[in-house]
Length: 320
Ligand code: UFG
Image (cartoon, rainbow, N blue to C red; front, side, top):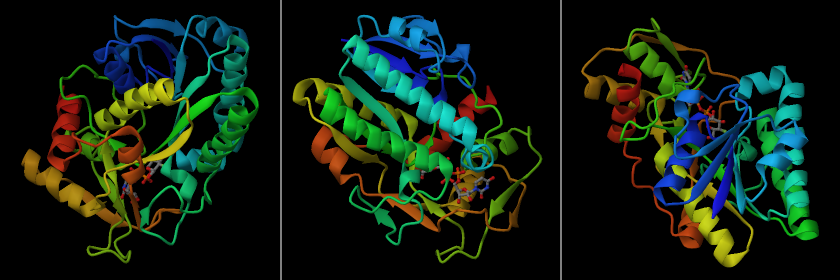
């Protein structure tokens, strides 16, 4: 099997590439290196520098490929509300180019990086895949739209897909194989780490008056190596069952912002400089996954996601 990993030089993409290579699957990476980094590339994977807006480059990259994992997307929620045009062009137009190129090259298996952002602000605090989808930011809208396009491409063109709705991706490969740090991170853990290594003076906790035990938001933090293993299983499932699925990827365990901060201080034996600030617009109080379906369908279970492992694996990369 040869798999094209679109966005394979990025944070999650590089972990997916590693998991595929570790399973003896041949990998070709396609990435424009806009946020992906050369340092994340593996010598044992082919690399094509190219952009998903370039249909000819995609046709070329898909030559001789059995399936595609697509992770090349813009993902900053705040930016998507300020510049929806960038998100429409990259996440929607770019993905449609990719699907059309797949149709032309007769590549029928597609694993899509979707997001818990498709759910918006649900009433439920533990989400399974039947919870109604009402994205409240443009980023989540782009992910949901692609899932809907995929439904049509499945029916009309026989593209079988697995859409993986990631919850909060965190952590780094424990063997130290992946070293690229995200530039201008917007997410909690990289911001905590930048503070821990002294690259950032302090950070804010957005809101301490949520209806949660300590007043800070609760999320479902899933180690990126666990996310990566789900992609390998998804490709195996597609080739064996030729069937489409939409699956949540999370642990089912909720952790508050303050719990993460305190655990980081304890494990790293340091004191972090932070203050409580106003709530961030659009943050739901609690978002956790039911990942029962991923277990049933793929036999997938997180094995890297305990908080200590998440913090230590991330700190190691930031420290070095
Ligand atoms: N937070 C802070 N301070 C910061 C950054 C974040 O307090 O400096 C808080 C947020 O308010 C939130 C929690 O930490 O309560 C997690 O925030 P992140 O920005 O790390 O992650 P989000 O839950 O907002 O979103 C992430 C991804 C989305 C994805 C979502 C799925 O960025 O793309 O997880 O659950 F859709």
